[in-house]
Length: 605
Image (cartoon, rainbow, N blue to C red; front, side, top):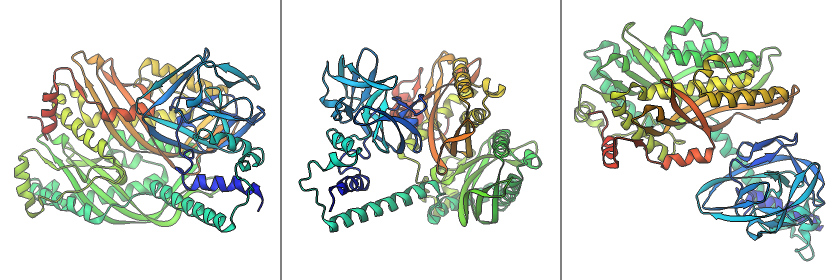
């Protein structure tokens, strides 16, 4: 068998078992490391996506282009900071750097006064290393798998796409036809049976990986038993409340939710929310109208066929002394076909024309003046903690509510499968802390904080599509951020770049950190925003990059006070934002003992 098979066998093994050679999934550069795109611009490695074109080089130092095949991320316990007189690179020790002679050396083998090679004009030139330091912090790092010649430029430095140290040299040689890969293999013969096994394993792994990714992008249908454990308690409490407040009888609430759900689906397809404006909170109405505007801008219609409501489960209630703060939540389970068409050609452009089941949590807020309920929030079932949240009946103590539950008192629902435990624990602490802070400062009202962040996120995404920062959004960001956003849009306009976010939706907003000072101009909170969309980037009206399907991503936003309002200060790199889950909340007037006391109380004492 020809020795050229060694290179594909190596690739099969590398893809099939990412840990086998230590490079396929290895993250190597910190998130903000700039990667050189084919058009000469740069993008942080954390934002580089499959399908993007990068500048690359071959073993002879010739400048080429390559395409990103896959992007990886992992957490490591340390990294190196390597400096020259012109740049500083933060990288893990195993990443291979080009040595100028067709080979690669791992970062850990580099020494002060050694050369690495950087892009200058259209050629590679040597640059001497002046300093190397070790940092032992735990961080998230990123790496890319790219097509041949399997190289790219990080911070302008020529590197291999692998994270396996000395293995990089063989892979580089393989880029010229596989010869370098066969050098260490003796005769170069490969057992046909072993080759078949390797190919089979590769195929199986690709299949299961596809199924895993597919499951993560599809809707999650929660376990029925988990839902019933919470809904039985909620319905018993609502039946009790309904004895003295007939508006809160379970059958009336379920009927209200069903009716609005069906009406909203019709109006969504028509892209016209005016007939139901008064049935939605101003935030929901504004956000959905923005999304419908995006659909019209892209000439899209979301078609929903054969819609059937399978169940309406009452899963949470907050019945407070103040009527305007009362709310209930239902889990709506429905089936149907859900896809998008181009209104000009009527051609299906994405979605599934097969029947599928979908679930959402809908939260309704009571309006005392009109004695009705308006829709306040829609949350995806996959990452919601509503089934784990306790109902709240302010007129009774927790013990009194348990007596209402009767035999169901000990039953407990579980949070959605995509809600990580640390987020659930931290959010619970924050909610209890805010119960106290809001007593003296209404700006710390949790619902308004989350709704404001969600609404601004959608506004800025749609402003990015339009190419201009709207007046409403400008009022809700710090001046420095507005300047940054304006410059970003101006650069895109100059490069004739447009962005499209199709099927855009915010899946969940979560509070990550609270910082409360006596001087409230120093106050801050951090929120994680999870969203999904199919992103497309066009240059000169030609598609430069497009997500193959709807993709889920998350961002960490920092809000501060400016002229009496919460405004967006900055967006954090994902690694920095993720680390904040472990950071303790701060209240200037409270020590840790007092903070722990706040956390122990389900309501403000």
